[in-house]
Image (cartoon, rainbow, N blue to C red; front, side):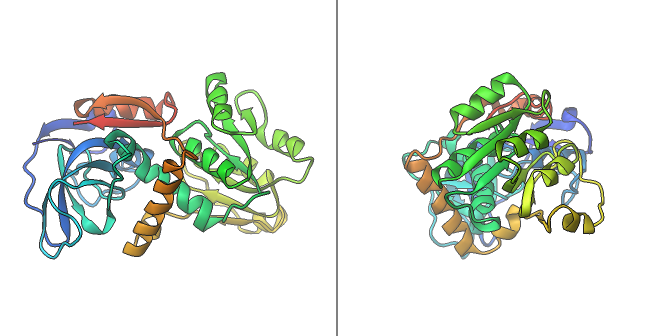
Length: 323
């Protein structure tokens, strides 16, 4: 079969499209024929070495959707031909993938493979951010950075469904229009305005209840300045670079703030949580409360181009690779 493999860390050019022999699924694994594969920033972090992979060479990619080919020993609940989707299973950039059954779920018939591949990692991230990290309720005010990105669009729509007010930041007029079309009440172009100053203007000096920040270094200080007393700073990415070490008393000085960096794998460590979180995500998509936007579809062989677009912030919504 064909797969993308990384033999050394570096830029997009290290993504090699080559032949790879996949063994039979082991105990607790399900062999999935990928019909679509999601592209995410975590793939870039692993490719570059910012996050260390288990070994070199490795196959990147953590989410996909397709059909069950075969099942390993002791696997129950799946059979050949089942439509499935998964997240947090390294090795997705391939025609077929042995996926741990623990993170595999049945894909509803009314969700196509491309949407399934585009929604699992990003959608489950939005789920734990909104429902488990800071439980958003009607009346809350949120600041969502990169509001026109893959996670940002889902966060915005879902938060509006919950009755919250959403302030989004973007990097261009086109992205501002998209964020508004997906429910953002206010949109700030951080290339033209100081977003923290604008947030305080919008909230009449009160600040927001929670900031969801996937940008990192470039937005950290402004994010803290955008929060109300006892507000929550939730970091879940570092598109601009890692947040530098800081004195924890800064949180006290800026209003007794809470700061956290939760990770999706921790939330998916128990099978019951995988099922409950996926059901929550599928429900809001089925109701039409959240629309999963697929920005572009590229052949698996063009994974390097997908990474260039994502790193260059040329995307809105999700990128998927098609084997």
